[in-house]
Length: 182
Image (tube, rainbow, N blue to C red):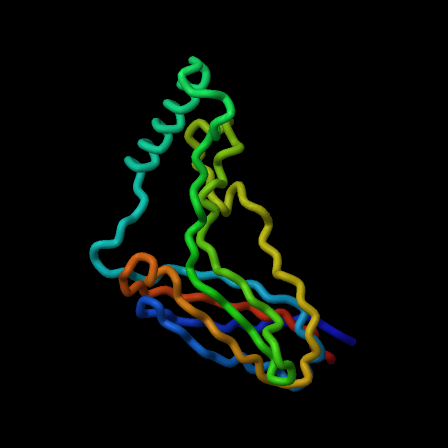
C-alpha cells in the first residue's frame, strides 16, 4: 500500500547574491517523488531598504484614477494601456536534481506576492486584496520522478538581495511530496 508524505528543507539566505547547494534525504522506502512546492519568509533586512507603504499605495491609486479620468475625457487616446501593471519581484532561482539522473527534474523562479492581484477587482472598499484572501489555492507542482536514489541535490541562487544591493536575511522552504510504500 502507498501513502503520501512530505519532506521539508529550509534554506537560509544571509548575503546578497548568495548561492546555496543543499541535499534532501529521502526515506529508503520512497518509490516516487510526486510534487514540489516552495514558500518563504523574511527574517530581517539591513538599513536603507525601500519598502512599499500605505502612502505609496495611495499615490499609485491616485495615478491610476488620473489615467482613467484622462481616458474618459478624451485627453488620452483609447488605444493606450488602461492600467499600470507591476512586475512581480524575483526572489531567487531554485533547482532540484536526482543523483540518478543527469539533468534537473525541477527548476523554478521564486517570486514574491502577486503585485497585480487587485487590478481586476473593483468591488473593494476597505478590504485589502492579499494573496491569502483573494489568491488561488496553493498546490504543489506535479512531478513524477523515480526515487532510485535517497538523495536529491538542490541549488538556490538569491536574486532579491542582489537586485536591492543589500544583505537580506530570509528563508526558503522546499516541500518535496513523496509516495512511500508501507
